[in-house]
Image (cartoon, rainbow, N blue to C red):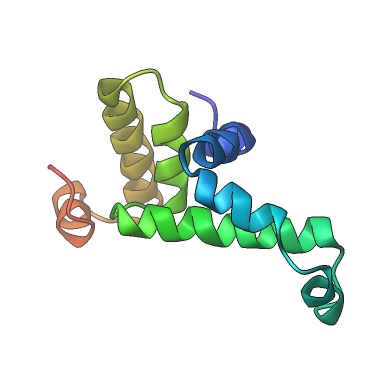
Length: 109
């Protein structure tokens, strides 16, 4: 399995295709707002895109990496399998019992 970060740009592209209102908002950002933050318009746009992506993940009750996985896997079954695999790795790295970890993150255990 490739790390979720490898597919992040693909997920962002799919997110924009599924949410044209976000794409429209990003295409009409005020360049002066970027300048006020000391950023280029491209940097400012990327920041707003990531904020919208993270907000959508939160709305769905997911971490941003989970939304990336959801948008880049071939099926709902593949998503769930890979999602649980990553969560198991995180639980193991954190030294948590799997059932305890599942309770903390509302996962099927």
